[in-house]
Length: 631
Image 1: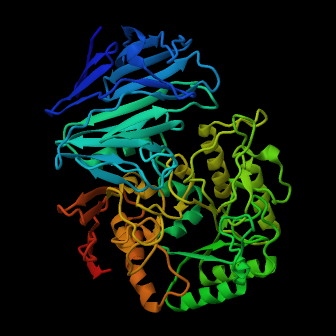
Image 2: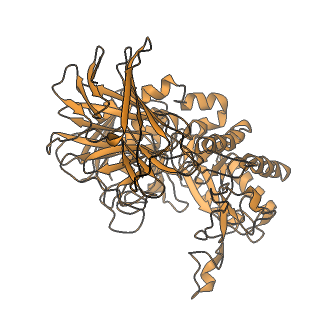
């Protein structure tokens, strides 16, 4: 049976038996349609096409939604065995918002039986070169012009170059979109924690994986269509979506809850470290030159260098200290105490903190509550996240060597204990960076004593950060997954998807756009690294990190050994950040066909223009003042 669903903005023709759907958008000649059918992937590798199932459907209006329920049953495995489960779906349009909504779920699946539910089908994208593009939430944001392949080669958790994880570097936000002939859509995962996407040519296929071994709840998506717009439109649709749900927590709100956060506005980040010890089983261990595996910069030396930086004109700084624990950086977590004796012990760290305060600086540190080191005092495998088979993750890449993963459900207890210890030592911590919480995928735990879904993992990670906030400590983490940032004020970085993270030869994957900043600019402080340079960590060798700091209205890093000239140059970005940090980034424009000339406009009227090739930039403030330069 075929159904016609329509409201003021879209008209949908839907055939659940053939699994076809088309969307006509009021005010546009563009028609969007499904390019495939739904599928169910089993854990044994079999893939079952819903088009081969027995379909039963019926209209399902709700008063605010005009929709259709469809049930797919009678699916058979490749060897002819009839499966016992059914796939249930719903397609509807919201009569108020005009959105297209899809729900899908599996009834009757057994533990571990299903690997993925591939539904809703992907939208057909047949735009010619120059007529459209795809927008992906890869790191800060990626735009891929029509006619160009979409590559996922770097930064992805996946084993192929076609799959992206939501809430990883593949998906800072649970969002993607496409624009064709000016008409476009924003696709939002309303249930994002077990969500993925895969690329089929130039089409984006959403799919969902089990939670604790079962497809145990409805997987929902929202599609918002617009007749005329661009990637800015997609970002603003998502910003409004988050705001309506109370998830767009601005810096003003975070400052009201924790006044220390206000210090970050117009303040550079100074990243330094004390001690390093590389475990013999670590990937980084240098067996040929064992002297390279241990080094130390005393707290007193760092304090002296900070005083010198102040003399060069750095009136303010947020100091981020690595390697303060007993064995130094990335060791012994979540129990890194006592404080490293070679660096100066508790007395030396206290003196460094006091130096920071005397200089008018804030004192922050690196901390870690995911990697769970086997040599950590009090280590118990019972606290580790347990896999479905009863085993546990094992890794030995980082400096501390062999480790599992701490179950996030128990992590808040360790945070409380450790920051009580800082209070006992009378070391006043102004900020803390809980490593990887806002960059790596959410973990599951199958331990029956502390089971944890991916959604619960995000809740417990936020809880750890909220403990810091409750103590007046500025909360930060590595990057900017939007399921975490409501509890963060600062991140380490949030750059672009490149062909590699570090080293030489990095190029942009697609065209970089500040998609994340268009949604969240006034919700978090993002620092950018590099003055008078090209390339940085996950910034293409052709690009200036400083220009991106200006275009994104972010703050910058200061090095301990900056010259006075460096400090003064950096203050251009800091002044801009003071002006716009609490503003919305309302628009980002690509001004020419090379895509290298850009303009950003903030809600107070401030504009920034930059040429990523020449390095020229111009900042125009609302009072008419103009600042120009070249990086």
